[in-house]
Amino acid sequence: MTGQERPGAERWVPSRGGMRMLREAAHDCRGCELWKDATQVVFSDGPVSARMMLVGEQPGDREDLAGEPFVGPAGRRLDDALDAAGIERDGVYLTNAVKHFRFERRGKRRIHEKPAVGHIDACRPWLEAEIAVVRPTVIVALGATAARSLLGRTVRIGAVRGTVLESADKRGTPLVVTVHPSSLLRLPDQADRAAAFDAFVHDLRRAGELVT
Ligand code: URA
Ligand code: SF4
Image (cartoon, rainbow, N blue to C red; front, side, top):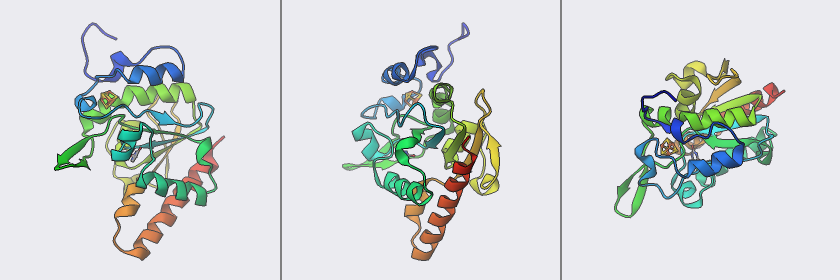
C-alpha cells in the first residue's frame, strides 16, 4: 500500500496466509459498492491443490443466496461441459472475477446486471491473491468479464478464443479464454445451442491438455 488510499479491494486482502484467511477476509471487503445490496460475498469452490482454475463473471441470484459459485443454471451447464470434456469438477478451482452479485430490482425479482469495468478492476486483488495461493498451471476465463480481469484489458472473445494467452498475474499463467456458460442458455435455436456447447467443450478440453 502507498500512503494514498486507492479504491479497490487491495486494503482488505491479507498480504500473507492461505486460502482460509482470504476467504474470511473477503466477508469484510468494501472495495467497491457491490457489497451493499448483495446477500453475502461468494468466494470460491474447489481444492487449493487444483492445477486448473476456472474464472467466471460474478455470482448470480442463486449463488448470492447460497454463498457458493456456479450452483444455478449456468453452473449446471458448466458441469455438463466439464463432464463432456473429461474434467472432474471437484478437481478444479472455481471462482469469479467479481465476488458480489450485481443486480437491478424489478418488483420481487433481481435481474442480473453485468459488472462494470470499475467493479472488475476493484475486485482483481482477490483473484490475484487466489492465483498466488493456488498456483494453477492453466487458467480458463469464462467470458469477457473474467478475460478483462485476467488480462487487464478488454478483449473480444471471438478475437482471442482458441489461442493460449498469458494471464497478467505475477506468474504469467497460461490462459485460455472461452465463452461464459450462460451464453449457451440464451441461444434460442436448438442447433445453435448444441454447436455452441460443443465449441465450449472443445475449449475446456484444450485447456485440460495444457495442465502440467
Ligand atoms: N455465473 C458466474 O459467472 N458465476 C457464478 O458463480 C454463477 C453464474
Ligand atoms: Fe470487494 Fe469485490 Fe465485493 Fe467489490 S465486488 S466489495 S471489490 S469483494
